[in-house]
Amino acid sequence: MLLSAIAYPQTPSTDIHYRLVMLHGWGANAQDLAPLAPLLRLPQAQYLFPNAPLPHPLVAGGLMWYDLNTQEGLETSRKHLRDWLLSLDGQDNIPLSHTLLAGFSQGGAMTLDVGLSLPVAGLVALSGYLHPINLATLPPTLPPILMIHGRQDPVVPLQAALVARDSLIQAGAAVTYREFEMGHEIPPLVLPILRDFALQQLQVPTRDQA
Image (cartoon, rainbow, N blue to C red; front, side, top):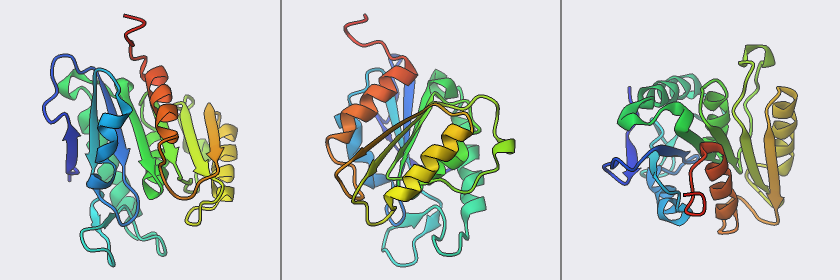
């Protein structure tokens, strides 16, 4: 099963050389994060916003990567997301090495879960957390990681982000960690940080470098 996704722009031109994939959170869908595409202003980039494969039991039109209480669906979503990301490798002449994977909340957890074992340019977890991992199963080289979290997050406690950060550093990952006086959200102040990280990891030439 390949995931459905919103693409921006819908048809990549020959000037598109990079890709940003963003995973929505629990109970949302691809439309939740799609408005961020024009705000990030990444040159030569295509944005993909996939839908999680499972319907949310309580939110009309909402989707989820897995049930938060029982973890049911995690293995299914993990396989579907990995297969879908691998199917993107080389599509429109954009390799995974030119792809940045990001996610919010449960999408951030899925980003770390699946992305750690893929040759992507980098990973971004916004208000996310880390599933239990076996460090011995991780590849020797891990993608650079950006983590951003709110000190007043009522959904994913700050402590979960700190545990994730420390575990990833222990695993050998290069982690850039930022926290702010905010809740469970993606406020405007986060966007320049995400953009700078994307430009650096994707090695996108800016006008100043052209």
